[in-house]
Image (cartoon, rainbow, N blue to C red):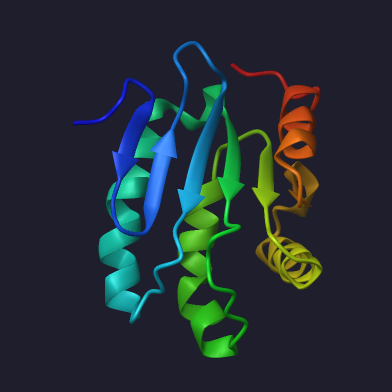
Length: 140
């Protein structure tokens, strides 16, 4: 069914972590949420997989390079709780985005959500991973 490193997968997300690794990766697919209810149905089991992993003991790499960018205020408003629930309790979070516009939007949302002090946005997986590995945050 899944490889040893895949914790969860649906049409919207894939959650992986190599054995013995401290960085869990959530890859967001290109499939758009059609409604808040669809987002809830897709996000809740993914969030549960992160809860079961033990957030305080891992770093989060969120790869949203495939995701279709949406900056409409209504969408951002109803998706806000999912954004917050995704990053809660991780000591450090790195966002991977495809474009400069995506970097600007992600940074704006991180600041609005109050998590910018323990998160940053990158276009390169190498830099994102280095940020997580060299964060100085101690995993408990």
